[in-house]
Length: 194
Image (cartoon, rainbow, N blue to C red; front, side, top):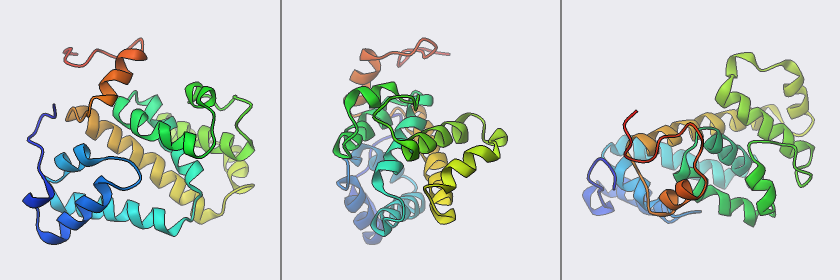
């Protein structure tokens, strides 16, 4: 149960309600997240509208966006994001055992572009200040500068959503089940005080 009262599209001004509905049932069911973010309509409107616009542009193939999001979410141990984005990697043809290996990029199912994205998303999350030029050369072999900027944005934004979801205990049941199936060594259980 979230730490704040979930809202519905009916609680919002019409323009924000339309964004709520479009995103909540979009490429994955994010209704529970939207119900909490709705407490700040400008955030809901701008963040979700931006994400939908980026997806519609298709500047970066969806496979790479989802690889970045799942990599970041696994590093941040966000069961909500991992549970909602992992199925999207299956749609992109990435085998379950390769997804399970993330954030490692060593699985043979990953090609050079996949590995560059996974490694980059990991460093954006854990050590953005220390990314070496060699990794940018690997990225440039597969992506334009605009695509690299978008991969950076999407990786950093995934970190925001990880923290947002965890801090406000946004969970639809799938995330909680995943947490209990694959607990991390350093992660307290839900409800445990740090």
